[in-house]
Length: 210
Ligand SMILES: [Zn+2]
Image (tube, helix red, strand yellow):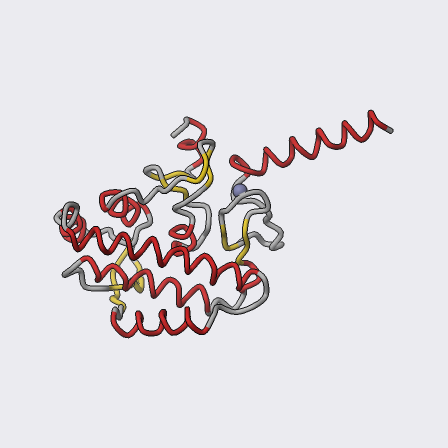
C-alpha cells in the first residue's frame, strides 16, 4: 500500500472501503490496480482480515473463532464459494445499475441462502446509546454467509437504487451518499484525478489543433 492510500482512509488493512455499503465493499475485493485485476481475498486469512476491517466481525471471541479456521478445508471451501458468489452478485448489481432487476435465478439463490443462514439482531449499548446490531452465530465457516446474504438483501431492496453506481473509470461499485447524488468516481485519489488530468490534456490538445 502506498502512503497516499493509507492517508486517505479509503484503504483499511489492504482493502478498499469507498462504497458506503459493506456488501459493495465486498464486491470491490477484486479491483483493477496498477498491476491489473487483483484478487484481494487471496486466502481465508485475507477473508478474516476483510471481515474485521469491514466491521462485520468485531468481537474478540468471534475473531478468535475465525483464526481457528485459517487452515481448515471448510474455510477454504467457503472462500471458494464466496468468490464465485461475488461474481454472480456483480452481474446482479450491474443489472440493477442498468435499470433492470437481478435474474430470477439469482433471487432464488439469495432467498434459499437467507433461509439457510438467517441472521437476527441484538441491541447493544454504544457511546451511551442503543444500537441495533446484526447478530449471527459463528459455529462453522458457512455461518459467514449470514451477513453476506443479509447485506445483499438490503442492497437489492434499496429504495434509492439509482444511487448504486459503477465508477466511470474502473470496476469499483459504490452507493452514492453525496447530497446532489452526482458522484462519478470510486475515489478522487484513485480515478478522479486520473480522469481530470485526461480531460485537461484533451482540452489542451483540442485547443492546439484548433
Ligand atoms: Zn474508479
